[in-house]
Length: 247
Image (cartoon, rainbow, N blue to C red; front, side):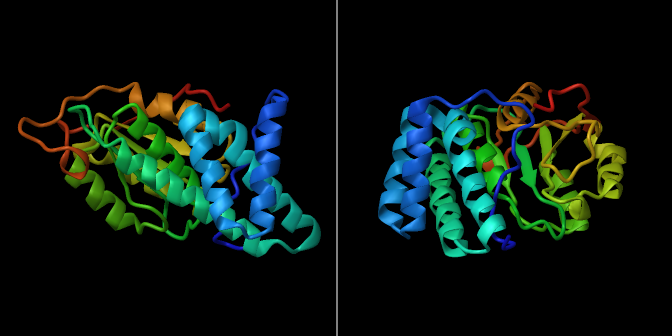
């Protein structure tokens, strides 16, 4: 699969999708196969408005991405369709993030991927889901070097650090150890997402609903006089969150 293809992992357990959801997946993957960006974008925006980010991602968008990726695995074609679908979803999620920026006054969630990790569309889905519940977040995107991650964390003192690793090569425990032991992050929750992390790693979540829950359950106040989004910070805080659902 091309590195920029943001195919999400298959859920470990899932119920059969409803017929209407299957129809929307079919329509979306057909538009992508035809390289019809206008239709794909229209479908995605309609789905997000109708269902919200969590349901739209879980039931329609992620299955559509997996279907495109599975076709590539079987036939080695459809790369352009997979890229188009990823870009349409990325654009639509970004629109949700900016449209819903009415933040609660609390510390932000820091969203990032370790150095070398390029598959970050699930991070954008989480940022959009957080925006829907007015939880501020700072999305630093793909391939963040370890020192840059630590510097950002100590500057922002986030309520949660969420790290996404799609492959084992980018899921490096040493980075987790540094974050957990840093004295200024002793109350920040560390949450891990993506199939790259070994099963039962402390702080691991298995799907978007669990990630949203883990990122919104902790409550730390913002500093007095702090501004929304990237300027928000909390009192010092990193504890590891264990026992969260892995989906």
